[in-house]
Length: 307
Image (cartoon, rainbow, N blue to C red; front, top):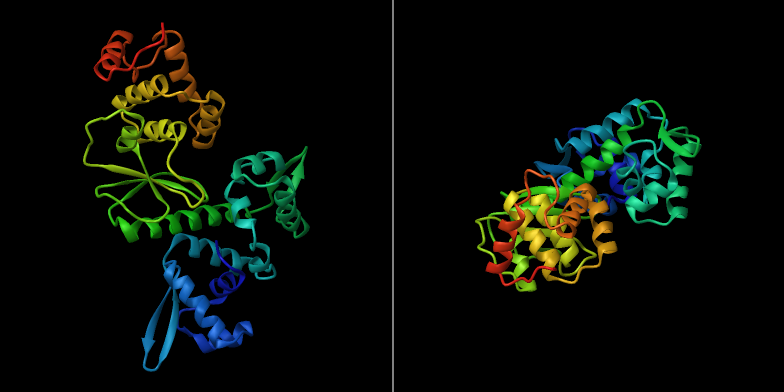
């Protein structure tokens, strides 16, 4: 997410520092510092101002920068750039409450050994402690989690604004986000989802003015299980009926569906939809259709319902 040199620059940059002054403070070459500042500027974490022939570096007003610099000022004896390299920020992103190594490893999709190494570094410096197998922050170091969250959100916003300035993030984690836009997006790592994606599974719905995309560097085309979860996150009662049609129409792996539901925090919603189909609508829910209404909808789209 951020290289050590970028964290070093953010830790010490003061309003009006030049590249030369930063290079002196950090004992790096000016060319190396210039590249780091360029990368930070591209991420919207700093910007540069011309002062004659010199270029001055200024911190942006991003919340992530504010949180990080406050930590550095209040705990100047701690080498945060060294602590936060590698997988540290990813682990901290999911460290939102006292958690076990296994819980963080599952949520962050990392190996337990990776999470252990990060937490050991933090524990050795007194930033976290353990109680009955759970790790928790000491003192005000829970702001490390806030920094990781704010940084990920900021970078997601940067990526989205480049291709859809008026886009909205509906859901996000460390590496991915679900976006709503008013225009069609054709950009690397943005995968079509929402109503438009149903056509790939022979369900053609009338589209609204909004389009939806999953940003993910790892994923390919959005699967039916992912699409079902994304549709619920779009949060429209009509969309729940479309989810039910998809679950009926496509052969979906229930274990995979529940795994995706856990990722998106939709376990209860998915469980309700599955019980609705199993019981032919004998489930309480204000946002679910009556069974006869759903039967009519299924007939309209030529989706046979199980007996």
